[in-house]
Image 1 (cartoon, chains in turn red, blue, green):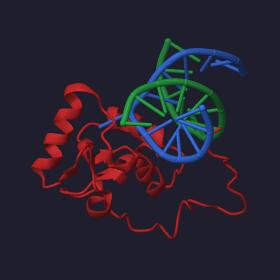
Image 2 (cartoon, protein in one colour):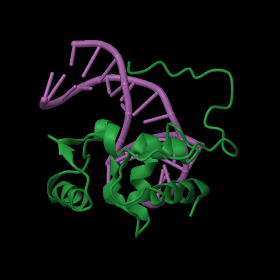
Image 3 (tube, helix red, strand yellow):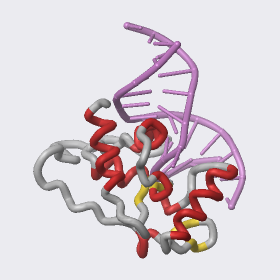
Image 4 (tube, chains in turn purple, yellow, blue):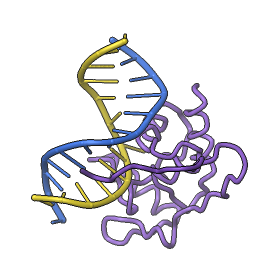
Length: 117
DNA sequence: TCCGTGACGCGAT
DNA sequence: CATCGCGCCACGG
């Protein structure tokens, strides 16, 4: 298990029942911003994680087909309500305690990503 | 070592 | 709203 994977897995395990989070938020909280794609990898790799609590940006389900149905069912079972196709993050997104110490999400200087194209 | 691969994210079409 | 394009980045072949 790489440190990135265990950090992400540990972060996901912090999301309580009845709450959700997003790939980007998990990656950032784990100390690896911009690694949202790896979150999905970890979900597939590590067993026993509350995978259904991880959604795409905006609170949308990223899975397709029956898995998407199952995810929605599981979330509603634990009290998460949907607004159409998505979860109202304002209400259900889990706030990770800010990691003031280790793994500074934003070291210093620039954040040059120039979005989109 | 290079290359394809994502349960991603976001602006532009 | 549906799609596309591009950045992102660890992994496995």
